[in-house]
Structures are given as C-alpha cells and as structure tokens.
Length: 252
Image 1 (spheres, rainbow, N blue to C red):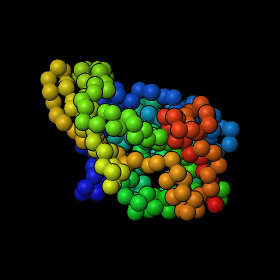
Image 2: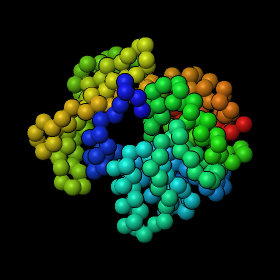
Image 3: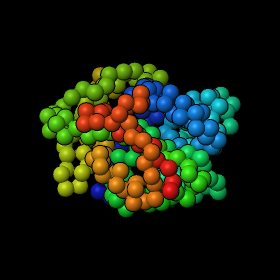
C-alpha cells in the first residue's frame, strides 16, 4: 500500500496461499447471512484466489470479486473458468475501485483490512464502499481481535505456523517471527519459507492492528451504523477473549 509497509510477492503465490488457507469456517456465516437477508447482489473486496467467491457463487449468490494482486485473481479466474462459472472478477484497489453498479452487501473478509496501514487508506476505502452500496446496504468486516499478550510473548521468537504440501507438489514449512511497532500499530511479520526441505526465502507480511473500539468509531464517523459485532463465525457475543472482530453495519 505504501513505501513503508508491504506484503512480499511470494506470500501471494496462489498454490502456497491456498495450501495454507484451507479453512472455511467463515463460508457458512456468509451463506446464511446473504440468504437470510435476501441479499441480491454482493461485492467481495480482496477476494484472492476465490476461496469464498467460488462456493458463494455455487450457493446461488450473485457475487462479484475485486483483488489488487493479479496473480491471486488469475487463480480465481481459472477456478471459475474450469467450472464454467460466469463471475465478474476485477483487478482493482479497494481504496479506488470504480464499478458502474451498486450492491446490497459488500464484505472485506479474512483479515484483509489489516493491510490498510494508514487512516487515509481506511477512510478512502470506507468512502468508496459507501458509493457502491445501495440504500441501507450492508458492510461486513472480518478481522483479528488483537492480543497484546500473544504479541509480547511471541515477539522475536521463531514459531512454526505451517507444514503442508501444495497442489503442485511443493512441501512447505513456514516459520514466523514478528515485531510490533507501538507508534504505528503495525505488526511486522516475517515468514521464513522452507520449500522441499531447503531454506527458500524470508518474506514479509505487515499488518496493521485495529483495537476493538477503534474501527467501531471510524465506521460510525464514516456514515456506517454498526448493527452487530460478534467474536466468531458462530455469532458469539464479542468479548475480550474473542479471536475475531466480525462487524456487520449498514450505510446510514
């Protein structure tokens, strides 16, 4: 997003990304929400390789997807083409995208909002989302509930966080170290990749931390009304020990 903060390209290697991100806990939540609220048209920001986009389309939801990373989007396009699905998948930036259409719901899933490092980036994104929502349209954001205790206890330690094989046959181990910046609220994460039992590279994944009351306030001041806030995809009440912040709001 800026010269100071970034995500290394290798983290967006499509097969490595898909092999690491196999969970679908969030899928059932989105399916139920869109169906129960009779949502006719949905826009997914940061759709990546289509982990959610493809199965949501299969569930009968009219969904469009946007992603800034062309290599990830190419994988989503390939998945849709292989299944002969007609899904609009667009290479755009969530801060500046322009689509000649409006949507009943727009969502930013799976911690992607943590890559909006500056308030300027966040406010541009929220303003842009507002332009593309129908009256009373929904915005859903799914992101970490930060644990300062976890960050402090694990700072500068190397921890294995993944060990798997990709669809193209690569054996992948990822070791993580991180360092938190108090002044910027950026968690500087380094992933050491070991590919086929050989050290491959060190890649960087910078993530901005949003504290529980912080984003709530930013949403309210940017013309969104928070309807619900949950602590996980099972819709448990948000609390101090919740792993997630799952916010559902409406355009005012």
